[in-house]
Length: 101
View: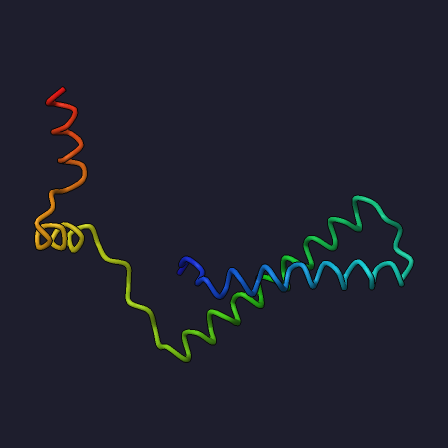
């Protein structure tokens, strides 16, 4: 199931991406692969895969430590929370404002 990444996932995977780009550039330079679009694309794809893998590892570790995260609240639960807080539904409030003008 596709879920939003955690904040740690975004931070760690971004750092890993830039580190991977640096090392891949250096490695391919040592191997004699000429600079160009092919090498740039190869570095980008490989760094993206490494970054994605590290992000998934972070999310997996976080889930093992904290346990599964609760599911996203449904709109019915949100409406009940708004009523309990004494607030109107945002759509209803916006339509009342438009109707009064």
